[in-house]
Image (cartoon, rainbow, N blue to C red; front, side, top):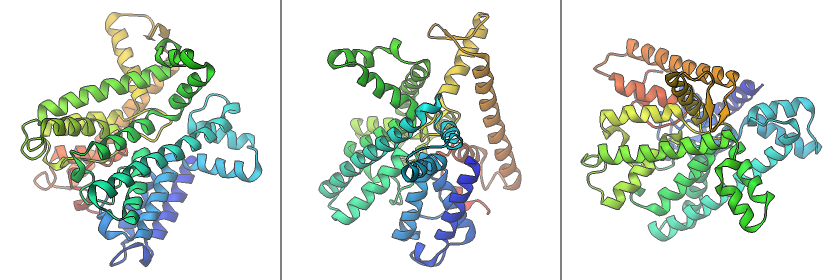
Amino acid sequence: MVALGFLSAIAVGTALLLLPVSTTGQRASFVEALFTATSAACVTGLVVVDTETFWSPFGQGVILVLIQIGGFGVMTVASLLGLLLSRRLGLRTRMVAAESTHTVGLRDVKKVMLGALRFTVVAELVLAVVLTVRLMIGYGETFRHAAWSGIFHSLSAFNNAGFSIYGDSLMRFVSDPWICLPICAAVIVGGLGFPVLLELWRLSRTRRGDAARTALRDPSRWSIHTRLTLGTTAILLTVGTVFFLVVEWANPQTFGPLSVPGKMLAAFTQSVMPRTAGFNSIDTSELNHGTWFFTDMLMFVGGGSAGTACGVKVGTFAVLAFIIWSELRGDPDVTAFDRRIARATQRQALTVALVGVAAVVVTTLTITVSVPAAVLPLDRVLFEVVSAFTTTGLSTGITADLDG
């Protein structure tokens, strides 16, 4: 049902993007419309045409709706509509929604969906206001254009889509913390996953005053899923920022011309975006080859479960790390934070990781065999494939050159 829901959204989006009103000039071809609709519904962000100049405001609106549906989940949206119409959820709808939102108990589905909806609306609205004000004050844009840009990039960022109505993504804002940091915050929060956000919210509500703050600051009171997600995310963001700073510091095509604060901001932004967000504040095609490969790894890991980010998930990555550590130590059980990780969870993590590797290898092999290496080098193809598989949207610029 989830797969059919996404296919239906993609089909409707493709049909709408094929309409003459969706483009500014000549009508989109079927491949262009299908690719764009799929990329939007799957919150990927890879494009074969320039979103700013090729698509009309109507076409951009279609893309935005597909991003919101894809980010929140087709089945979750359908369940919410059913809830609003009937004021209750049937068992079948609850089970589908539980699968979509990774909710443990069926009784919690209604609360989780409504909580996720409220949080999504508030987060996207706050970011849209911040971006709109900054674009008007700092860049002299009209209210109409600034508001549309703020809304578009707010939804695209929170849903980790990476679509931008600017041809250079965020490159024109590379040194502007009022643009980059709010977008990074939305990407991180959206990528943590609703279960983590819901748990933190519940902790803040269970106790009052200082006791509530203590509960939030005490990791021992968090579930193992929350600790793994937050801990691994923090580590990857820190390591990524340091790596980008060190490797790209003197690159004249990327960090070289920037000031020290600008380099630090750009490094942090580039570390956040492989969470499967897809925005870029520097020219990805000019990165060092080693940076491409490191970004491949960050994209493959992705974000948190039941969030808007994709990849194999930071939880899977953390479980695999604990499995390796336990094997090296010869421990009979795999434990994390003094808790044993179930064998079913271990098998699931291994399966997800290996299936992901297989998908990337097969697709990369298919493209490299069909296209000469002189035209598309292996490192660029691998980057594009990992970006597509993890629905990240970062590109070295070869997507539009691929044969349909």
